[in-house]
Image (tube, rainbow, N blue to C red; front, side):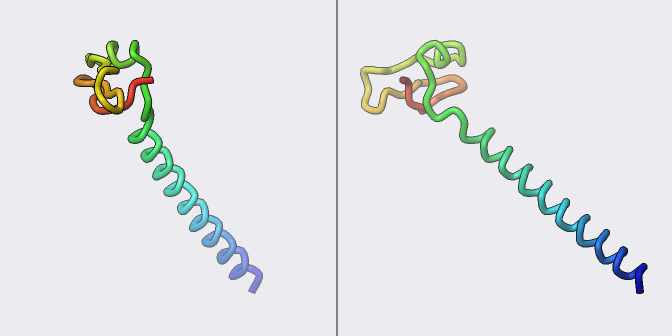
Amino acid sequence: MHMRRILAAVIATAALAGLGLTGAATATAATAKGAPSVVSPSECRQGGGVPRIDLPGNPCQGGKYDGQAVD
């Protein structure tokens, strides 16, 4: 009986740890995709784009940050 409780506790701990790792990986992936949403003019240029502050929404045009707002 004692061995069953230990085994159940080990399985439950492993399951919870697996869920925690999955959640952390998902959160990291989401953060990496969405960041940054606003870039500086120098970041836009360094990424190969041109800051178009004369256009509505002040987008970075071209390069790594294409379409993101320039602040």
